[in-house]
Length: 201
Image (tube, rainbow, N blue to C red; front, side, top):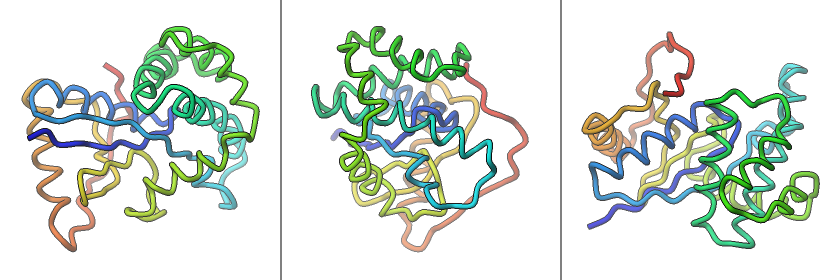
């Protein structure tokens, strides 16, 4: 029986990108279906005391998540992954990070979506729906974590934070293990010092 995996991402988060690649790889070795959703690091960090350079990053981060919500509103949830994958390939893998609007516009084209959806990036029209999506993902795990957030049935958790994305059966093994530990009532944390930055391969 197919397991539905719901994944909440902010397009600018490198760790969410790697987790998304892992879950899509898991589909090749396990009977899972991955459904993408939008969370927002800008919403998460609103009102928090963060460094000034991060404030500027969060200001720009509103654009891509607004575009994702506009895509879902117009086309349906199944169109989020093509845009997210196209955006991530440009932003994370190719390093097109200087102009988020240009990267989002190119990703819309790559995904075969209406380029006028870029207008949502500078509009608050979809902000209420963005926040609803954000809180639907975050409420079950709490707010001292970021993205990625994964829900599998009644089990919800932040992570896993992994680099690079496991391939083949290793992806399935990680999935099995993560679901096993996260499904134990009262299990909260398993962590070790991160010694590597994100690897996009």
